[in-house]
Image 1 (cartoon, rainbow, N blue to C red):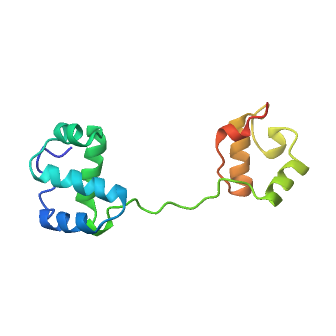
Image 2: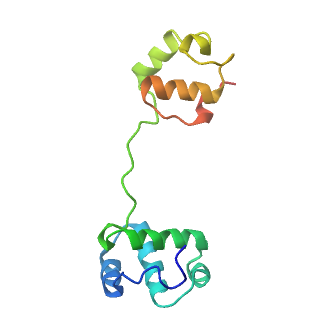
Image 3: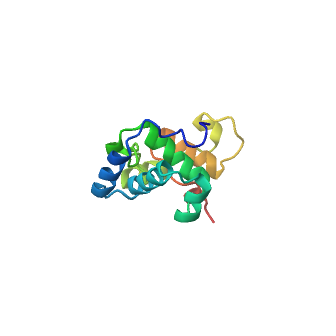
Length: 136
């Protein structure tokens, strides 16, 4: 961990202000606001008190500001993996499901929600939530 006060020594405060005036991304605004307060001498605890975000979150935001260009402080794009089976995938899954995990190549005696989720992810490249695999 960098010593207090030195984390943003290489970041231009005026550039942070300019970016804050133009940003519309909520995450970027939070990061810029935290960085400006920090550059003005506020501690992580004081920033937490002022903004209501945990110190660790503020610290992480300061890390982001220190590592990236001020013009790129929003969230990084995330890979777009589907979270739902298509109708065709559902039909394929339910038409002839493997009777046991061993038939599908797993070394497990029975299907569990986590194992069904893994099977769907590997077979269809769909990352569903675990609780959608529970049948009552």
